[in-house]
Length: 210
Length: 210
DNA sequence: AGTAGATTGTTAAAAAATTAACGCTGTCAA
DNA sequence: TTGACAGCGTTAATTTTTTAACAATCTACT
Ligand SMILES: NC(=O)c1ccc[n+]([C@@H]2O[C@H](COP(=O)([O-])OP(=O)(O)OC[C@H]3O[C@@H](n4cnc5c(N)ncnc54)[C@H](O)[C@@H]3O)[C@@H](O)[C@H]2O)c1
Ligand SMILES: NC(=O)c1ccc[n+]([C@@H]2O[C@H](COP(=O)([O-])OP(=O)(O)OC[C@H]3O[C@@H](n4cnc5c(N)ncnc54)[C@H](O)[C@@H]3O)[C@@H](O)[C@H]2O)c1
Image 1 (cartoon, rainbow over the protein chains, first blue to last red):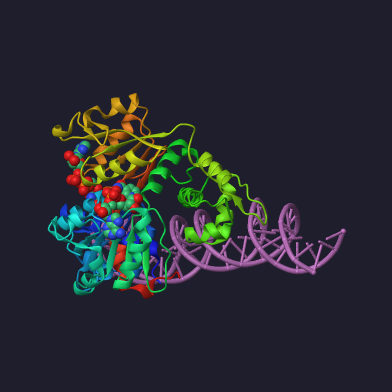
Image 2 (cartoon, rainbow over the protein chains, first blue to last red):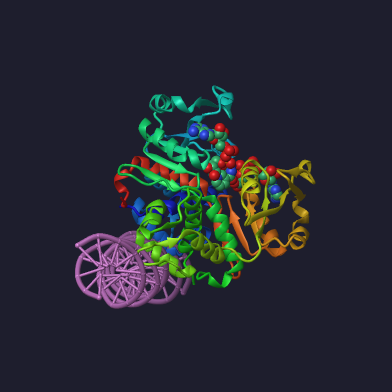
């Protein structure tokens, strides 16, 4: 029911609000947040309807309070448990980044089929054999899987994750995994982003917005 | 004028068509491609209007020919020249991936501010000081920049790229760079994708589609 | 106290994207 | 040869998303 695009923006707002708080700001107006997010202020107010708003006319939003509302909406009670399948270049980069930083995104395990990686601790995270995925997913209560294996392995791995009980997948392999009932799949296609940027670098006039 | 979403899908179609050709298939119907892309067949036909179509009723699309049309639409005459700023975990992963693979995406240079990386050859690609960016961008005729520096450096780096003559930016730092006239910017926010997946793993019922 | 001005939450309008509809064309089997 | 599909390209309808509008509310200043 909540539009996916709105969820995406709310995730962004969370970081914007966090940065504003870090910079010492105590409150902000919808148009200030809009500027930082690159959207219209009416979009901000509209999106905020989903999270239970708490702004005050002429005083804007109390940022501390707003962050509480956003996080309450976006996150559950406990942190979300992730796993990464494929500890190659991309998998490692993601692991390094989120291990260090995020309290709501917890990477509980990584899986690879390379025997040399088995049981190694990478960035503080244990690497298991992909064959043990189902067991570990259940044991560690992992709900979200990140797929960073070569494209020809992606479908197979997705099936393994789903069989293990994963509810949600972020797939970086350049093959769209088809969605099924009771499953959320986000296909993140980096090649597409580069090609899109290349296209518009040559066809700026075809760009509607701005 | 061409919708951004359509460009995104056309990039995807290119890979799907490539895979079909690799698998030995010679032609395909819109509904077959649709299945693989996770869209409706009418979307396929609608999108194909932008690229100059060549399908035949009852025989579908000749894949060889279709690929030609897609690539003609998506790519210019020459390959596109990219640079990456920030050769950390993510920058290196991207470099490794696209260096190896793509003939239309050529990474001409990478930039970092770390003196230890200066003039080193990484994945066959020379690393320059960010201070020389403007010069190298012009010399190598680079049109697209990939930003993979820490978030607090992203705006600065974007300005350097734009000053150097870059037309198009793919930004991986989690701060939206605001778009200006005559510039294409794609903000790719990986944290957002993970948070979105986490949200829907807990709120599958709020998912409209499927 | 009262008024001007600014910002919110919400509803309505507009714009954009997706999906369906349908005429037309080509294929194939009777 | 003809008729019944099947699928394309295009246009129209529908749905979704974004943007604008505006009454209600609060602040601040006179
Ligand atoms: N690196 C990038 O910038 C980039 C860009 C676009 C797309 N991608 C996609 O992301 C994925 C990963 O890319 P990468 O550059 O990290 O590749 P990589 O080759 O560096 O790493 C792949 C890893 O997956 C492991 N693996 C292979 N099969 C497996 C299986 N069945 N189960 C578990 N692990 C398995 C391999 O052992 C390896 O460690 C690929 O699908 C690639 O197309 C990456
Ligand atoms: N790695 C991930 O999976 C991931 C996920 C989400 C977001 N990001 C974002 O991507 C960006 C890069 O992430 P990373 O993990 O590769 O970080 P990293 O710290 O590994 O690498 C950053 C690199 O940028 C270089 N650098 C810093 N300032 C620079 C400047 N002014 N000019 C040129 N080079 C400069 C550093 O020397 C370093 O090599 C960050 O903004 C991060 O927030 C990364």
